Image (cartoon, rainbow, N blue to C red; front, side, top):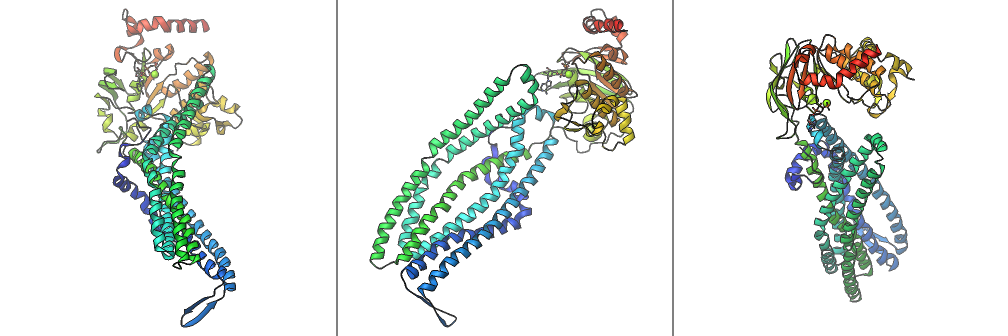
Length: 611
Ligand SMILES: Nc1ncnc2c1ncn2[C@@H]1O[C@H](COP(=O)(O)OP(=O)(O)OP(=O)(O)O)[C@@H](O)[C@H]1O
Ligand SMILES: [Mg+2]
């Protein structure tokens, strides 16, 4: 399944998406509610500031005293007292607001990070269990973007939006209340004008969506580019591809610039236009307000409160307008995330899968047909039996399907028709874990993880004892190399084992396979030529791994091939010959004999001269 770089199909099924994200939100509902409760006073506080202007104007500047009755007592606050109370009140207020703001930030960051963590961990669980074809089809950039960035955007978005919407809605309501209290006529004018001012926001939402889709594609490409620059740095240096990578990167970066600029060009007029419309509102309010004051229907203080509220109202309303766009992005991200949750690995256990406890008789390929891409058969009607503890060497043309054949045994891919059986049980009826536990693999290009040599070998069997580890290292002929390293087994090897030589990497992989101690061994001999000495060591290491095991070895060395019990020649996906070296040499113009004449004879004569 190829993941798209842009939005997923279900990005606009809002109800469905919310029902999917609900289980992730549910555990934190109380905290989200708490954040929500804090956001309400936080929003309302803006209104209080505006409201305080009224007593300030009317009593302090107007020089009046405030008389009121409370609990049957008469109170009188003089203008002078008021001029002290109000500023102190403002500071206390700001302090209170600050505390609420801190709590609100803390709670909302906490919840959004927790939700992000939960989603990321669940997604990664799915990612590591995806079948290899999924990784064949999707670039690293897309995977990183979709498995790592989107969950953050999605869950941080949910909590942030709840916080922003609550603060803004209550902020706006508080300010509108102050406005209504000051003068309902003016309030009506103000609110109507503000609503008109936000019409343009709704208009450009579509453009923003298109641009954000484009940006997602571009940033996926950029990540892939950086990954390839890293992984392919030697090829890049060897073939002077620096310019090519740079050109790609420059183009992608400029694309991103252009998308953003074209968006800005088309949307930046919005804000000034909104201000312009709003200014009409303010102008009207000023004119009408002057009339109201002059005709004694409104105090100067009420008017000051009103105008301040109106100006402050711009912010929460604008935030709400932007939130519409953010919510759109949030749903796009959610859609992308939950699409991943619906991806199923194509290689999974059957319901009634059985455990492969032991391997006793043989492995059989029966009429096996396999293709990676529909209509492009790679293996054609292949039949093959390998008895226990025998070695099968596989030879044939490059791209003929040798690696593919051995990759089918641990079920990296499932075959289209036919069956592969271990002791007469179809491997698709076995528990995947138990099947793979019985197989040790050494690949054509071995992947080592960043970490120490010890860690990399122990991956073969994390429960191995120190003695078993020592034996595996000895059999893989790694002792000398390990002894030469500054920290021995605990020497750090770079990402993908870059600090080791090709032969050393292979031997670490052999030691790993050795430690696994599985009855079935698959060796995909590297085609890369090692120098004679390291080739001989690798050969010895491999020989040790093959003792008393059932082995499939894709061989490029005559000695390995000759030592095998039987040789299978795979040509263009077909098993064309099967037998011992002597038997196959008997076939006049046979594939094996031709191969021998072309490649191996030379090796043999080289070996003879070496001896
Ligand atoms: N992951 C994949 N997706 C699609 N096609 C693939 C994939 N891996 C291999 N192929 C194709 O399948 C065919 C067989 O490839 P395979 O790797 O099995 O060849 P091979 O015999 O091991 O060759 P070599 O000796 O060069 O390693 C080739 O045509 C190859 O292009
Ligand atoms: Mg191969």
